[in-house]
Amino acid sequence: MIFHPVEESSVTERYVHVFVHGWQPGFRLQERLHAITDLVPALPAWDPRLVDPVGRTLSSYHVELLGALEALGPDHCVLHYSWIDESATDVGVMMAHRSRQATQVNGRRLAAALQQSLKNPQAQLHLIGHSHGSAVAVHAAAALGRAPRQVTLLDAPENRLSRLSGAADLIDVVLPRIRPTRDDEGPFVDSYASVFGRPYHRKGGMSAVVDVSLYAGLALRPTFFEAVSEAHLYAVDWYALSVREAARGVGYGWSPLHDADVGHLSSYYHSRGRKKPLVLGRRAGLQQLMGAQRPLPVPHRDSRVTDVELHLNRRFPASAKVLRLLPGDGLITFDIEVSGSDGTEQILLELDAVPVFISLARYPVPASGRYIALADGSAGDHLLTARLVTGSSAEADPRVLITDVTIVSWPDVQPGFTMERVAMQTFVSGLVVGTAGTLFTQMAWRFARWMLRPLPRVVRALLAERL
Image (tube, rainbow, N blue to C red; front, side):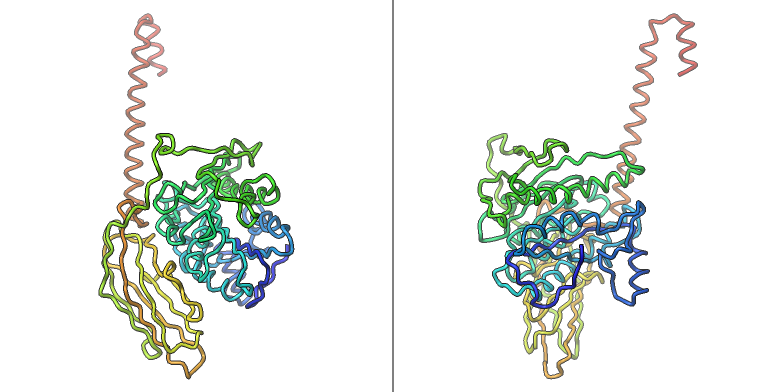
């Protein structure tokens, strides 16, 4: 497959599919080495020199899905968004949070790039994200001036294991902002979990999401990491198969881009096995089994409007304020007013020196995308920084005002990631497992001695010596 750079206003097709890769552990040194050698800021994810320990190129894991989408016809355009310069890390479970930290700003970058490249205002946009790429896709959907037609999440990490390591997307506070629906008023959202995913439709504001639990299994591989990685990528392979066999009516086959009626779909499905992957069964949730209705969206617990205002202009292009966060805080929302602009300016926001938001003055971000998700950090003081990057025009006198800075909380919001929290959870987990193992061993030993009591004394003595 040959990849070409995308020029401004060059995408004219009716259907546009955008694939976003996820976390790439072990590729950090390769990406930096080749980028520096080529004298470029970053290397694309499809560069053939990016090879994993088993000899496969990075792009080979995604080419089946990209090829299947390309084969849909000449009115379908397939784009591949690369952010490997920020998603590639060293090998290590605790490195995942570095990739996830970059998902917010890359979602906004993707939204800006799409608005520049799409020429057809009626194009049907389909965002597809794997792993942390699913968070990039959701943040991009929220930042677009016109909502995408569909957002597909492939094994978006959300379970307890991914939350413990800091790898979880934590996009359950963001998804309601793009208003998933089953009609033409908003995007159709479907999520496929193979290892680390969890269903979204049970949470407030997301009852229209279609969740699918895939049976990936764990194949025999030289290392446990390779087995888990293969199962994690199974969602990509499964969706590629559903594109090639769209007539089966599942996966891409039930997509509105395939002219399917999504109104009749259930909220939860599961695959019956790897031998018949496209055979899905409906899975009833606990509330459905009990005859209860789905809960209404959970209202936020608190919205604290701060007195923070950030003023930016050509003379003072940076400003910062300290925000006090409390347990349960999930989002920081704000408003942006721009005047005197020629459209080339960029507004950048950072939280604790981590880039989280970017917008172009030419493409104002709608209210749905003016937020910062608090996936990192703990309660306490945090630094919010705003920067203005002006264009080359000396005549423009841009002025940016960031107002209505509001901190929004939920009763059940997941806590952010910190190394201290991980260390404490690891210690507690080890203590619980160790205590349970000790108690089990003692009980097993006492049970064995009790079972040996009916035996003759000499036999018991011999067995006791061996035990």
